[in-house]
Length: 256
Length: 258
Image (cartoon, rainbow over all chains, first blue to last red; front, side):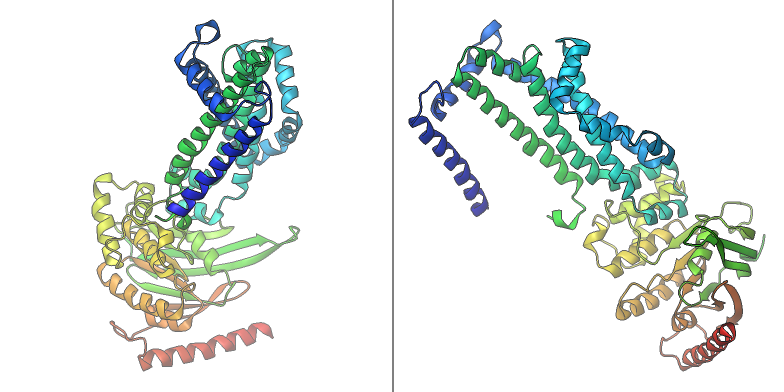
C-alpha cells in the first residue's frame, strides 16, 4: 500500500499548498484560499442559502438530472448501436447520422434545445441526451464489429437459443465497450448538465455557479466548483470503479 | 432403431472464391457411415475440409447437396444431442468453469436439477475437480481444453465431434490428454467423430480411420484398427499401421498431382 497511497496524498497536498500560496499573493475576491473555501462549503450545507435551499438540495437536483439523462442516453445509445451493429441494413441506412450528431458542438446543442423548448427542464435535459447518445451508439457499434464469431458458432453448435446467446455470449463481449461508453458518457453528462444548469435550468450546482458569479462572490463560486469536482470524483472512482472491478474479475489483469 | 449414429450421403459443399466471383468445391459427393458407439477418425491434410464437414454435421454450416442424418440413442428423438470440442477451447472466459458447463446444459434444455451433479461428475472425469469456481483464463491451455471436453460430455451427447482438439497443445500435454481421453471414454461412451491431420493420433485413438483427400474432399480409404484397448502409444502394431497409411497417403497425393 503505502507508497502509492503516500504519493497520492502528497500530490493532493502539493495542490492545496500551491493554491494556498497563490491565495497569499492575490486579493481574496480573486483567489480565496483553501481554508476559506472549505469553510464556505461547510456553511453551505449547514445554513440554507438563497431561497432557503441548502447545498444538499442542489446536489440532489443535479444528481437526479445526471442520473436521468445518463440512463436515457445509455439506453438509447446501446439500443441504436446494437441494432446498427447486428443489422447490416440499418447500419447502411442510418450510419451517417452518427457522425452528423457527433459534429454538433455541445454548446450549440444546448442553445438549439433552449430555442426549441425554452428555458425549461425539458430543454436542458434534451440537450444532454442529444449530445451523449451518439457517443454511446458509436462505441457499441465498434463493439459489435469485434464480436468473436467462433464463440457464436460454439453457442450455435450447442443449440443455444437467442436469449441465452445474448445473455451469456454477446453482452459479455460488449462489456468493455459498454464500460468505456459508460465512463465517457458519464463524464460528458455531468459536464453538460452543469452547462445547462449554468445557462438556464433552475436549481442545481451549475445554477449556483451563475447565481454567485452574478454577485461577484468568488469564494462561493469556487466553493461550488470544488464541491462539484469532489462529488464527481467520488461518483466516478468510488461507484463506477467498484462496479467495473466486479464485472471484469475474470480478466487475468484483474486477478486478485 | 438404427445401428448407425451418423449417415452422410452424397454430401456436397461449395464456398465462394475469395474474389467473390466464382465458387470452389470443398466437399464433393462424400458418403460416410459411423456406427453407434464407435470411435471414428477422419484424417486428412490441413485445409481439406475436415472442419467444414464437422460444422455441417453440427448444423452450424449449411450444405449444398446430399443428406446428413443423425440418430439419437433411442432413434425416436429426431434431435440427437451433439457435443463439439473445437481446436481451441472456445470457452466463455467471463464465466467460471462451472458456469461454462452450465451454459451447454442450459442450451440443451437439461433440467436445472441435474446441473450440479453433471458439473461435478464431468469435471471430476476430466481431472478438474475443485476448479469449479475458477475462471478459464487462470487455467493452462491443456486445462482449458479439458473444460471444453467436460462441457461437451456433460450434455451426454449421442455424438461427440472433436476437431483436432489437441493440435494447439504442446506434444507432451497432448500425449497425456490422448491417454486421458481413452480413460475418460471408458466411462462415458458416445459415438465419436474425431478429426485430425495426424495419422499417429488417429490410429492410437480410433477403431475406424477414414482417410480424406484434398480439393475436393473425398474418403479414399477406410480402415479398422483392430488393436485391442487399452493401447500403449508405443505399440509396434500401431507404428506399422501408421507407416502403411503414410505410404498410401503419399501414393494418393501423387496421383492427385499428376
